[in-house]
Image (cartoon, rainbow, N blue to C red; front, side, top):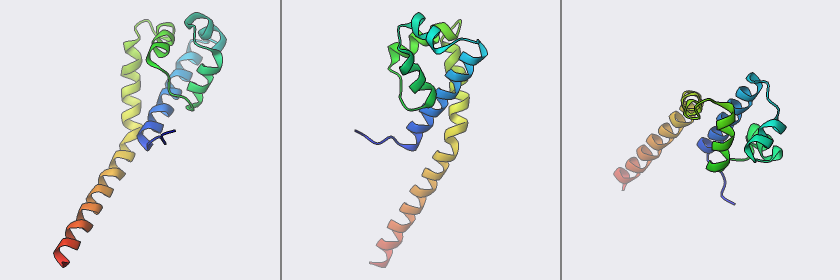
Length: 110
């Protein structure tokens, strides 16, 4: 199995936070969401813990229950994800710069 990148883990964690918060805000149980969406309660729990990434069809069916307009989820998600992933991207950019600097300095010494 492919190991998830830091950004992929941040994606799953952000998704988990938003789905759990929205479900709690609406005072809906995992069982209710499961029955209404056709997605198992166990699967919804895994999403909310960030241990499983949902498939698109299942996610859409859950979002139809949690939001009047499922696209509202993506507005919430985008804001949170970009905030959560900014430090990861910043660190990756620094590493790329350091790697580039090290490679160019080695070439100069040859």
